[in-house]
Image 1 (cartoon, rainbow, N blue to C red):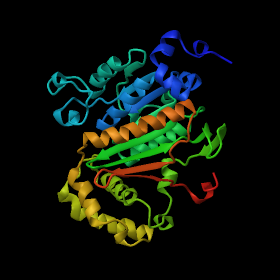
Image 2 (image 1 turned 90 degrees about the vertical axis):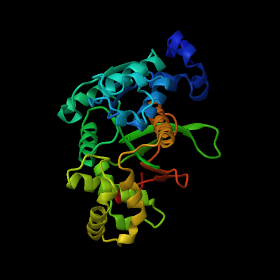
Image 3 (image 1 turned 60 degrees about the horizontal axis):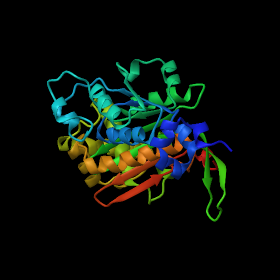
Image 4 (image 1 turned 45 degrees about the horizontal axis):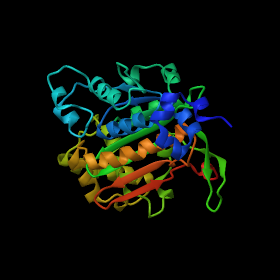
Length: 329
């Protein structure tokens, strides 16, 4: 049996001693080789980055050329007070500096430019991609690009709006070890994930009444922002009449009643715009960090494939949204 020192350097074994005792040296070794790309750094993404850097991933590349503003830093604890407006630095540059201080053993760098301009081969450099707030079109495009690569590139998208948070996971084909109920021995299991586009294509009429209403409300908002050319998170309460009208069109296409998506939920999401609440970011960022650690270490059953949270009632709901032909996997 290999010793910890054969799997990790002495420095890694010493620094990550506590977590090695939890998930083992082999899992930590795999994690220390993980190469992660993050696109768009919001408050919830900052929380996620902090968690995975402290856990000891191999490298983290940040992409966000947006200039530093007071609004952008409102829920982003990685931004020091002296790095606000007027300094001329991008959000990615400022956050990278802070993250290096959390764990000097993790390589943190900045990639300039927009993700839409990168060729598909760009993704060969990574094992996982995390996308913050972005258009539904861009998320779908990046997810498809990840799926075309010769090696598995996991894909995550995450966002928080007011008291609500959402997460999507696509691990494609994933193998992991986990203990089954009533059995002390860990066994390898395989699981398949649909792409974001495949999940979007699942008809609403196939969902049961217990399905989280956030799934449909956020789907309406995502598509509305794309169709009217609005930047993600730029809605306000003034958009509510148009949003309700748009809901009617989408529900008609999906052959479900408009009551499927309550007015008050759309109003709540529209009125907060792109505002993030730090406590909600901490919760969603913690869950995403945990999911990425499980996926990169191949230890523990992953979340499949949507997660929704609303702090107003404290409920977190996992929704498995897959095409009918994948229900057996």
